[in-house]
Length: 165
Image (cartoon, rainbow, N blue to C red; front, side, top):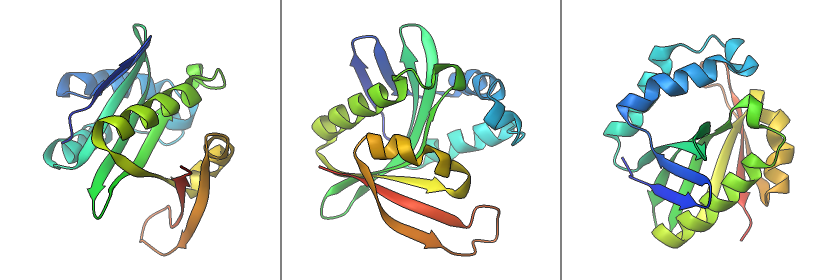
């Protein structure tokens, strides 16, 4: 678990605790995208446990003033350089298309690079998230790899994006 706290004006990114899991589940259950997937509390709790027991993973709640507006989940890789891999960057539906996602991603990117000396940031999109590709392009990411592989479950195509420096 990597403990992260970022505060920039009204935006706050902080580590998810066990007490936050229910709130995240409630917020996700209001989004049409998640309703269609029947995401249950146990699924969210399992993602929390994954991050909690892993030394290089982070799971952040995003707040704007007092409103919870989304989550970020990913991991840090320490190779020759420090890399961030974003597995989930999710802005709740009612806060989308208002510039919140771009603002949060920009703050996260700048602060994480400064705090942890991160050199490269990657994001992974599955087939069902390709509709958000434009968001990533607008925020300085480009496709570096398209993975087509049978993983034995629903999402077998992934796109890896990298933040341009």
